Image (tube, rainbow, N blue to C red; front, top):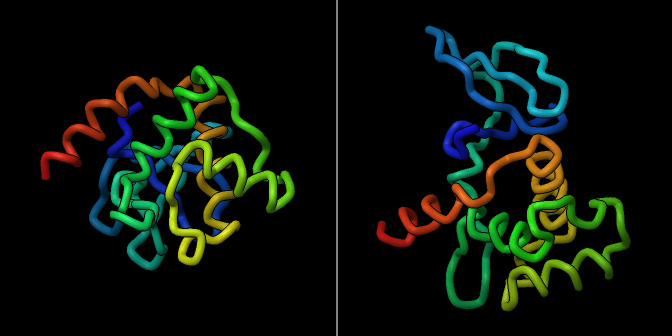
Length: 139
């Protein structure tokens, strides 16, 4: 599973892997249940590699945040995204010290943890994110 081909689709739960392109959009497969479906240009999508988290110094790529969680949890599942706001913010400050708590909302933290858990349950190779982080830092 290539990190650059994983995306979130607004209004649809979970994460999706891009399988192929069509004239009108892309064909994706759900990472959760394996169902395939077309995503057209009218859908609002976000590639995970293009997402960053605000800190007080810079924007940290999502790949680095997911790698930090994987290192903390040894690639296993993290806490549930349904924990209390206080537990989530406390956990996230361990994973990404110095995140901007005025611009990173609890809903953002929930989504990052939920995405991490989806990838962990799909046996995603988080070691591959090291290369992704290095590539982003060079740019």
